[in-house]
Image 1 (cartoon, rainbow, N blue to C red):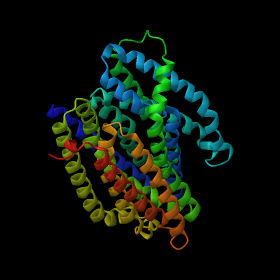
Image 2: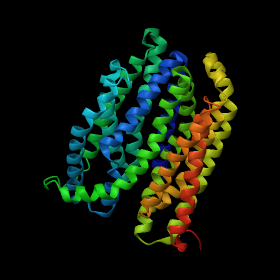
Image 3: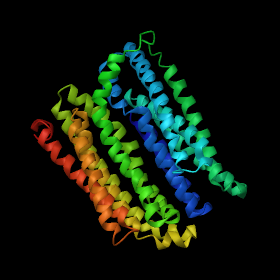
Image 4: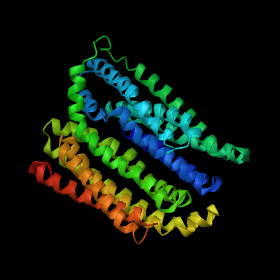
Length: 413
């Protein structure tokens, strides 16, 4: 068990390192405006994923953990039917991004190819995590988000003509395709049964009703992370957005590592412990979650503040040094987000979805209002300020809800 966890963390660490490598070399090889466009495409793909998935996995995960393997095929078949319906409804809407020139037409092929591959990878990884195959989930993630970045950066050194946005998007697509094939191969070996069952539309309807609140919460959160890019482009232009994408990529590496080494292990355990009515085990796991989150976040924040100056000088792009004042605020916002995930997972494990929804919506409202106010006087740092206030609001609100709604024996002796 321990070697598997260490190997899992090592793979996630490699993925994290690859993401660092990619974002820094993109900042070095691409013009800031191109990096800004890459950031817009990435967040738009990320947001569109929720139109295709509806966060239905939040329902499926709980169902799988409660059922025998012989029933899994029926559940997954029904989820696949829902997904096909959502594709038919969503793709025409997404074409409006290009019709309205929100994104340029020359990125349309890459957008839809990446959207399909990212969605398949996301759902397959969530399934692997739900059935406690975190190690294979980490291998898939490395192919999807890490290995291709290393390869394309190496090729850019050898052939400078590949230092283009198109080469990056091509490598991302190939990495996503390999990850999907590996995940399908692994799941095929599990010999999951139940596929012969009919699609259960009533079960799907029940799942949508249950998943809908968490979908609203996720759309609010991801909307914040999408709106910030487009808003900053409007306030300061694509070049400043390129600096923001770089700084956000560094700060979000902390969340990626927490997802890999902490959250992916804790939340399935918390669900199981609560369903088994084991308050002692739940308290112990919540304490472990809190200690590890604070420890990893603190170490990452200190290291990144010490290293950001030399790294920006190495990039040899004066614009990034000029915009460095944004970074501490972006880092603070990300730190507040990470701390807010402690009560978030405590609430999620208990099925307490409403306060999660309420706090994410409140955070989005706070972000919009505070960013608008700050933009009147400090347009270039209005977005980071708004993020800090939004994530502080969410962290405090979720913490209050956790202690108000959780039975006392589940958080204190």
